[in-house]
Image (cartoon, rainbow, N blue to C red; front, side, top):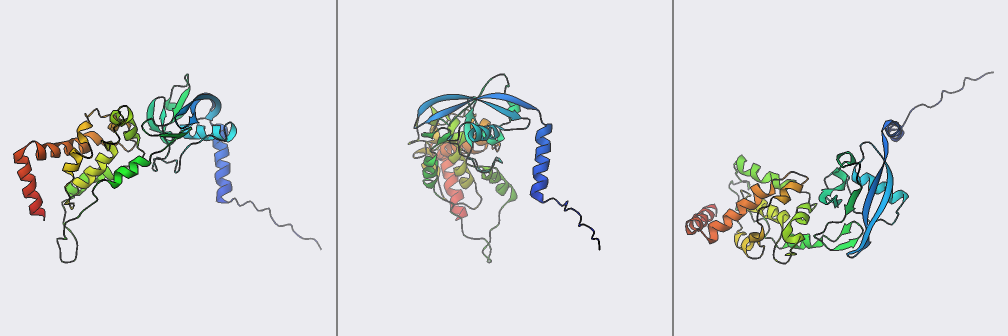
Length: 280
């Protein structure tokens, strides 16, 4: 008695399908060899080491760093997490410009020149491309937290104007990559970390100060402890922000205006006192 063989299982899993599609895409992509100069060393000392690496169309700098790490420099230290431009972990200086490695396409960089990758300069160097950014978290703790006014309605809710809500939404996009801190000359070149909180935390302070429910007064601290006067509005922080937050015009300048109103304009100070009493 003959039997009919069972048909071969031709069903692909989702992983198999993805792998096959990726292999097909890689095979059809244009390949090239690029030169990379990566800073290697620890605790502020080291040198650039040059690597040659095969790359394919569509790769970002972080892809190339991972390939070099996997095939040529297994001990290369690099910090990353999401590879989607949302965690802020892979900040570095690429060809001298503070950028996210995962959002910088190799096709946007001059193929005739080596891609230079080094750690951020405004923070203590740990190893290779990794820096110690813990100072930023200590600064954040020094800023007076959100202090809401009493609810407006009997059910414990508030009433706000939509325009006031919209104003602070931009600042909430910050991913704390600290590229703005790195490019700020007050921190990078003049090392005023003990006197100046930097653009990222001026944005954070603006998000609180401009919040329609907040009642705290951070203006004295902005002038004295947080050193807002050190910012001379070069707009370099706005230029490097991967979330396109208008840091200077929408956050820092309005905060500077509040400082001027309170400390250098007596009429403005009276208006502020009256408006805060009205909120309370």
